[in-house]
Length: 331
Image: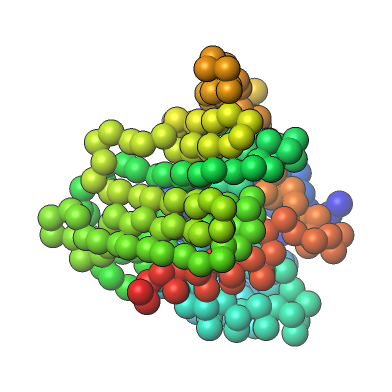
């Protein structure tokens, strides 16, 4: 398979941690250009690349086939539309867009031009979620009583951060809710109804930084919750079933590893955590999660672009997540 020549727009946390290491490591991608306006650290990390100071320069490069958008989320629509209009495939860091209308418009343009577009739902490839998907395939979730999906941390207000400015679609509900809503729909389907509440709990916060969303599936409820003011985290996933209870305690290990400088092809890279399986007889068994690697996202994307295969994260599912987030934001 011919490598997909790729340009990355932005070299902040997302571009530096979640995208460039995987494009660099994956045999089916070639990292050619990074747009970094105010520094050259991308060149320090990847000496072979070109660092552009202007997005238009990347767009005008006819060799570049795929553009990865890692700019602040309120700019996603504008930047993605420009890339599509230059006949580039597009991957957008989540959230996909700020509104459902924008998501539908991007999908329409991609369809008209026969281009790939998707949202970067890398958390589908965390070891804990891969394990949940495997448990479902094994029939362990045929009778569910309750699902809890929690992403808590302690994050003091950072007034200069774009997530704290109350831009449309640029907040913690869209940023973190996008992952769990995608996961809930992927595992359990669309709910019959939803209920939500969100609040500003940190002193001086301009944006909602605490939220709870309930997906009503009829016989059970899936609870999605986040707090920016949690010194003690709730378990990340707790799944109550008639086969027992499955509990996962921490977010996957890949992000901390990447921050520490571990690379995707290093033998020690990937999830290796233990989770708890509480059996009906009252005993508990420690089990190891499936080993995740975000390279898996890039593999399925390469197959979608080069071979025309159905991507695991479709543009329709990306838009559906925004539709739910918009409903939540408007309550």
